[in-house]
Image 1 (tube, rainbow, N blue to C red):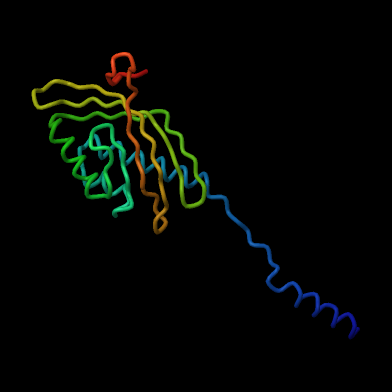
Image 2: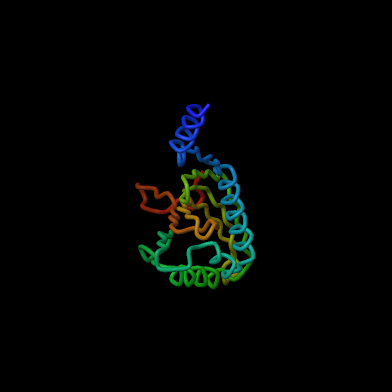
Length: 169
């Protein structure tokens, strides 16, 4: 009996720290959270609510954006906020953004996604301007919340004319 007790204690002592940790796959929840973030972006854009838009981005200098308009890049939250303010000032009329083809890939606390955005804006003269852009986003989870930390907005260019294809299909 003593031998069995000693063997049992030895076995238990040898297994301390050997416990298997269960890793929970949160990919589906993370993808849903990022889809919700992109839905909030669409709503805020259509409302032209710059503060609500910027709440979706990392609020520091680590954010980099390559927008479809100059300059070559925007570094940091404040620079991109000004870009949105200038954009909405150039198009004071109603905004209508529709997002399609959203695809998101998650890997831990970072993710990336891409989508197509079809936008109708109204300029200062009342003329409606339609444009289609391609958007790629890099996301990171900060304090349990997904935020956009890198964004690249582009339009295809016709190399024969060197003009942007704002109505790309």
